[in-house]
Amino acid sequence: MRIVLIGPPGAGKGTQAKRLCEAYNMAHIATGDILRANVRNETDLGKLAKSYMDAGELVPDQVVIDMVDARIAEPDAQDGFCLDGFPRTATQAEALQELLTERDKPLHRVLQFVIDDERVVHRLSGRRVHPPTGAIYHIDFNPPPADLDAWTLVHREDDHEDVVRNRLEVFHKQTAPLIGWYEERGLLSKIDADGEMEEVFGRAREALDAAADA
Ligand code: AP5
View 1 (cartoon, rainbow, N blue to C red):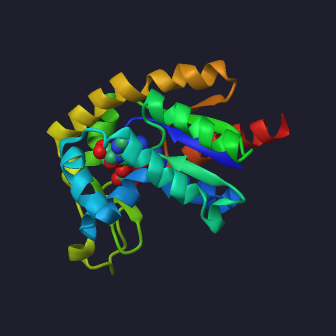
View 2: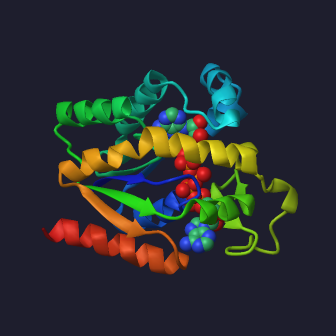
């Protein structure tokens, strides 16, 4: 299955993507994770992306499109993938459609994670990530295991409230218009992303199973 997850920062896309990828045997392609790995490794791409990411702005379209083009050509993505954080602009959505049409691998579903802005500000203030494994925790809702070294956990630079508010604004201006674009193409399922992680997972599965049966 080939799917896209769209939603504001902190909606739970990464959390659910990991579980959905296991359940449906999809490659997890998270553009934010790929960019952050490049920043950590101080590659040219990472050096270019860092200032945009720290400010909560989008990295230029062509950079991200080329990155996704290369990633979906990798062997583990041939049986399916979950795009988490891409596309985020009209240009990226059009480029994705072209790339997938050329490969005769159309999208099966786009899941829109719906959640209130204030909820995500709270979620992101408590998020801690574990770069060596990619695990995502929350100090209240999903605490890290007690035996994990606290120093290996990271509070992302862009999770500070002022940057989160800018990311939300960027989402509403540049990414939210894609929701209508996918709805017109009959690909969209809206998922209520508020509630326990298990409940949200159940809603996402229901939407994917319904799409597969249709
Ligand atoms: P990216 O890493 O993609 O960030 P994002 O989309 O803003 O999403 P987040 O990772 O912040 O949130 P999430 O929805 O995955 O939530 P999570 O599951 O972690 O992008 C970062 C930056 O990279 C961008 O700002 C941009 O600069 C650049 N970039 C990336 N892609 C790009 C593109 N296509 N074009 C241009 N630039 C791009 O959950 C959040 C927290 O909530 C966690 O602590 C989690 O434990 C908790 N949580 C999750 N679900 C629940 C629940 N049900 N109940 C309670 N808590 C929950």
